Amino acid sequence: MTGALKLVHSSDDRDTLRWRAVEKRDRASDGKFWSCVRTTGVYCLPSCAGRPHRKNVFFVDTRVEAEAAGFRPCKRCRPDRFIQGSLDERINGIDWKRVGETLDNNGWAKLGRLLSDEECASLISGYKDQDKYRSTVVMRRHGFGEGEYRYFNDCAPDLVSALRVGLYEHLVPQANEWMRALGKEHSYPASHLGYRRQCMKAGQMRPTPLILKYGPGDYNRLHQDLYGEEVFPIQIAILLSAPGKDFEGGEFVMTEQSPRRQSRAMVAPLEKGDAIAFAVNERPIKGAKGIYRAKMRHGVSEVLRGARYCLGVIFHDAA
Ligand SMILES: [Fe+2]
Ligand SMILES: [Zn+2]
Image 1 (spheres, protein in one colour):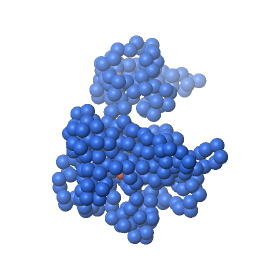
Image 2 (tube, helix red, strand yellow):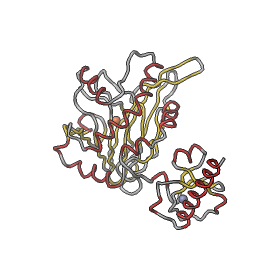
Image 3 (cartoon, helix red, strand yellow):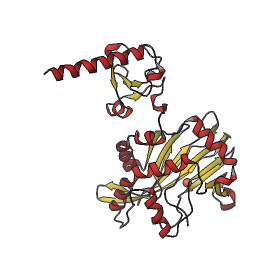
Image 4 (tube, protein in one colour):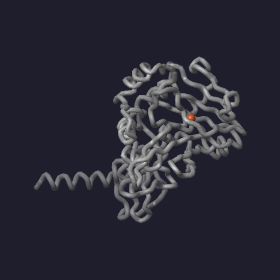
């Protein structure tokens, strides 16, 4: 009895402190909790300049809880753009259940913002440092489009390696699920290190993470990043430049080809530092008459102005 009373009190105290932080627009509290505003249906950072009434506000510990309760990110304080903690913490904070469902339904899913402005800037400035890369591809020479990209060598920045290892572990259950649904006898080990060994056995040893650089008039034709027999079915792209500011145009475009149907085109709206997961090649779709295969391709529409940089994280290595 007393225990229950105590519990009620402590959560009241905590909420009082949280409300005080909201009243002060306390930046130091950002990321520690989120306020959901019932009247507007949005959730906010404690530092938001909005002035909701206390009676309309309740608090949650994570963004996942706020979104699961049906709240949208506030357009003013942009809680969805807020990042903190180590890369692993950010990766673990992604709503992987929602990502999995969205990947199943659409073949792609936004992961939200993963990289800070500083991290984006450091990857962009590192592009000119040729020692970090194993090769540069001028797209026109291969008929891939216009623009160029560079594959990191095995001395890729820690950030890139950590993304590849950390994201892989969360995508593996889905990759294995897709293989089962497609009736393929292929499975992926739990760790990326284990998977690199599997790639090695297939003769695929060269790392595939890359940075793509597009200037005015550049684009990337629809394609699939296949580098041999061994294919991990989901890959990641992270936009490093700010649309509307650093560049115009340059939309991330995907198409899905299903049996006996015209292709479906999809455009993913991305902001700087945002990550997207998408199907590399085939994915299973549940239809009325069972499971069928859809083939995905992706590309980038013409950049009209400025420079657009993107980080690609592909989990299989290349032959
Ligand atoms: Fe690609
Ligand atoms: Zn807000």
